[in-house]
Length: 101
Image: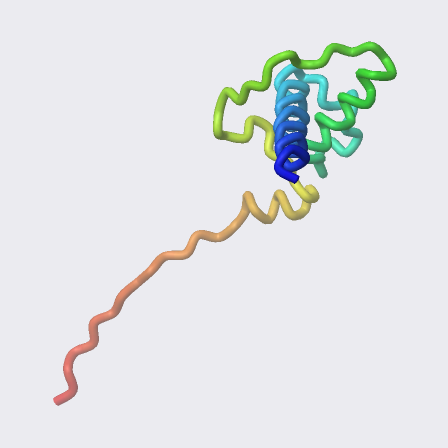
């Protein structure tokens, strides 16, 4: 049981690292046709691995994450993305009323 969980965890890590490498190399469009909707790095990596086996593309040899920040965040849709950009800021105001007479 522990062996299969480890294999699954390592496979997930590898495929996700492959996805981030594809995006960093500017080749996301090769496997992700939903550019603005966006697939996850796992999905991009999985599609790359499948295509690499068919077309002879290169796969990563080392799993490496260079940053904790998302270099190319996806968006669910353009209208939702614009709503997020145009979000109103809220201000907190406090009022002090004079004590009643």
